[in-house]
Amino acid sequence: MSEEAILSRKLKKALQLLLFQHHHLPGVKGWELRKALGKDYLNIIRILNRKLEELGLEIKIIHELEDENDFDKARFYVTFKSIPEELSSWRIDELAILAISIAIIATRNSVKKQELQEILKEKFPDWKIDKVINMFIKKGYLEEKDDNLYIGWRTKAEVDIKKLVESIAGYKVD
Amino acid sequence: MDSEAIKELSFILELQNDWIKRKALGLFIDPFIIDSKIRILGKKELASIFLSSWHPIVSIEQLTTKKLLNALDYWKVLIPLSQRKKELELAKELKEKTIKISELINLKILSDRKFNDEISKIKEELKNLKEPIDYWDFIIRDSYEETILRAYLLSFIISEGFARLIINPLEEKILIELCKDKEVKREVKSLPIVINYDIWMEKRRNKK
Image 1: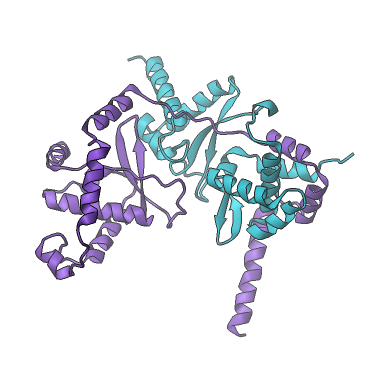
Image 2: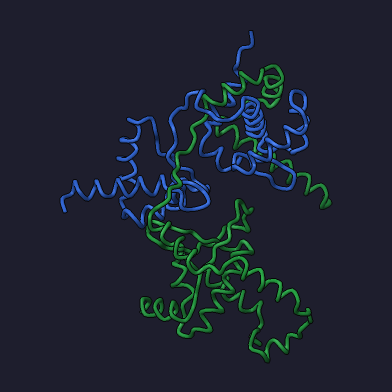
């Protein structure tokens, strides 16, 4: 098999592993990619990323451990580079609740669930706050531990937290 | 200095550590600014800000012909509901009674080896793994009984949250991975894995 054919086969395999959800979480771990593609899997991922960029997608690497050089234990995802507002299926108030939750948690590291509910109560009814917060916990955007809320795995993968917080802080109100 | 003061000091150090970390990550914005902006901004503006920072994950859940054929095989061997109901009713009619551990040992349902010791042994094996291991490689042993026991103990350990299964449908592989800590269970699924004598023989042959 020519080198080109081998690369093409590896790119296809990498894309299958990245897109096809085969755990309860989407994406794929680095060691799984190494096992399927060989030890130069990071190069294959770089080449695939360049191809996906042309389609408005990108490969994101989220390190689950502090060591950012340990790619084997990191999780690799394919994400949209940007998403048009009309494509979001969530209601505007659900998005607002999520934006507020993430911004507050990001600036404090965590927040008491009750405290967040009090802040949100100013603009949303109790029943909606509970329902939406629980929905985002279930989806992995928020994480609940001992009545405290933290940033969830999905937010780490999908949301540019720095940009979100800076946009809220710097938003000019007319 | 009493222990209460040391505890308070360590709490302050922890907060300072968090503060430094957030500042280093470029996320240092006074929480007061965020709180006040949140109160001023409308839901439309907040939603719009969120959408500009959001890059949703792309993933596919797709059926394959092979999966459908497996499901069809399952359907074929599935006992009709009416029959299963009868069996359940029959089971209900049987009077409940308690049984002593010694009776279970005599009946060879429970081994006289201590259950907890066996669990600890398997946990030790899992702790020594450098990377996830194939499910069958882990449980298959030279005797059928030991294999069944290992599968049973492993299912107990996985339910406890000490380890988890990784299913790779593309390669048709099931791997066991050690969990860092007892992880918070999200979207817990039950996974039936059939082991019988024939399967054991085949897997044992493949292992050799």
